[in-house]
Image 1 (cartoon, rainbow, N blue to C red):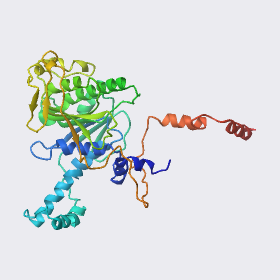
Image 2: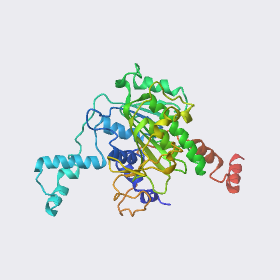
Image 3: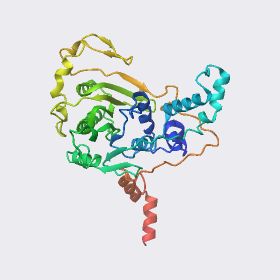
Image 4: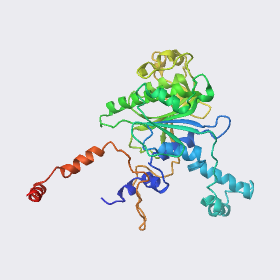
Length: 385
């Protein structure tokens, strides 16, 4: 297998190295932001405080650092900003339907990216990244080596956000909590989905302790048979719950991302790590009063479905599903032909402490994947004698 084989069969892996991202998962967060405006560019809800759970190797934290701290723009947002600058120079009356005008737009320095370095950094940004694995430093990112499933992580997180953190002061709370964490999959889908759901509940427990009212929560999920129960547990404490599938996420994968907007804290109650399964109990009646029609058109244009068993079992609710990113962009499951002069680049950030490091060292000590062969053993004995 050649060195460039992964570059051929994974376009986003190749693009991540070319665009200086630590991992291809950076495109997932960028595409989700394009759809849901996670980083809230408009006042007064501008996003400045973020918590990144299960952050290693740091691709999502890198996106936060480059967008919020450095003020860079990526993807469709960068294209829109360049278009606005181009219109300001040429005038709003330009007809982009004309082929000549469209060619002029494409060839202009603005659209080729020479002016794409216009930065809009935000003041007073505070980003906290948490993971059990060590992570290479990033500009402006506060890193904590902690376990999000353990209660001792909560006070560490609160002190990292603000040493004088006050849960009753909304200015001390964060605007966005994201989590791209997933367990080491076993191949047993039911077990993997269950473990992932517990990881999601731990992330939600932390989020509910630090999110401001109206804040947003994004986390990875594995779509399975009873995943609608998870959606129902999120619905009572968020105004909107969507399921997003970014273009950079392989269609063959069962992963997706739950995007929750408009956090509604429950008065005089927050969950504790260890009782995640009881998150639904204080507000279960809120779902019982949901609309009984079979179809409901939301203001954002999506159709919300309701089923006959909702009255008897209000815990079940189907969240709207949205595909994120340009659907005509690179296909994460496709294999592409590389140019003849293409040079495969090394990873931007090699693993700092991979969990398989000990296994690699043990394999090398044993002489390879299948242990020491007879010829190697004979050569070793001759060297000793």
